[in-house]
Length: 386
Image (cartoon, rainbow, N blue to C red; front, side):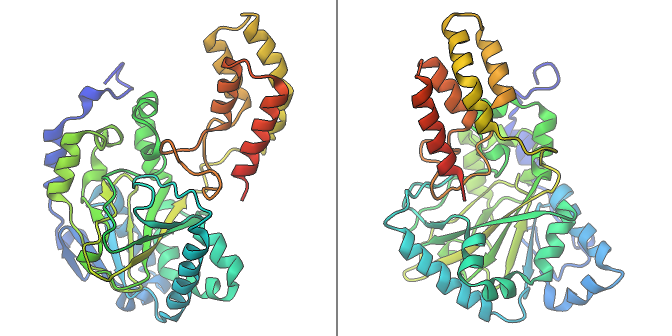
């Protein structure tokens, strides 16, 4: 580790990783669970729903948090919907959206080839606006609320993306998820190790099964305990780690209405659909901590417009060094690609869209005239709007 703070490529130790994923989960670790399959605890929420309204609620949530943080990293919550009718209606809405968006969508995806799966970005908002009554019944789910609170505390924010893996749909590559899992290897190396530790604490990954999903339909491939590997945001990209994932992952069949939630640092990937006629439809939930936000709302686009002509002149006259240019842009422009509208601003050439700061830097270095930059900035702002 460089200076005792920054990860290096040499910190990716396959033997240490293999030792972590060889652990076993015991029933004494998860006393609320009904069973353990392949190191994944299974909870029957029909039996446990009463706990959510009793003094044992905190005890159950604490167990889920320990699984995410210290144990195998993933839970399956069965029978989480008393009435599946809202899921069926939502499925029809999502299929309609898939059909409607297919011709106009750019089809970008994070960890799968374009066209390999059907994707509906921002399925949360789209379902709410298209059928508020179905949305209300769909998300009036105390299990979803409880498991989100278990990991993130109150005031969390939900986003969702529908994924449909068709027969013949290829598997995703093994990966970790948002935040650092979406960054390039070079960018991940720029973040100190304590931020690598922090990233999984900011989000929770989940999925709602909309149809019965046997293993041949491609349910998510999961590698229990892999979230415990500190250098995993670098390691998952390496061939030897990817091969280890492929040799050790587990898949569980899911019934309609089952929930799967896991630590976003868990190595995982959507599976290949080898079935003849099963269209695996899931709603992927990405739930964010309330704490990952700035205190003030800043109009950074206005700042960029005001600053650009001055900054361009200073750069062209060589009055600013590259580090000084980066420092000014870092204080001005939005350096992060998210949140954005992934329908209109998809990750086409990488895992993230171009950020405002990256656009501004590119324009300065290319000596683009202010008027042209303003048009580029307007286009970026338009793409990012919901």
